[in-house]
Length: 80
Image 1: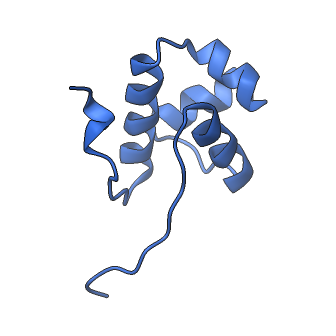
Image 2: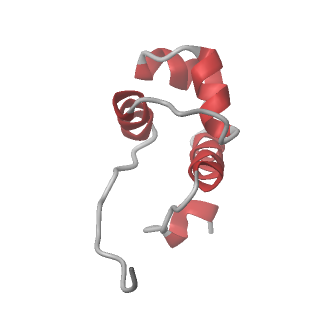
């Protein structure tokens, strides 16, 4: 069983998002260079995104999610 088999996952921080992307990339056997090229983002941006250290634009995040076979979904929290 892989770490992303438990998806969907609630992501409330850039660190959790980054870790999820890195785990998924590893599961797919892809390098950061491969993902960055396919997503048309810089390798530096991808490294920062995976480390939770960036305020990446939504388009860059969506492109990386697409390359990794993931998607962005918005839902209502049970508490505000």
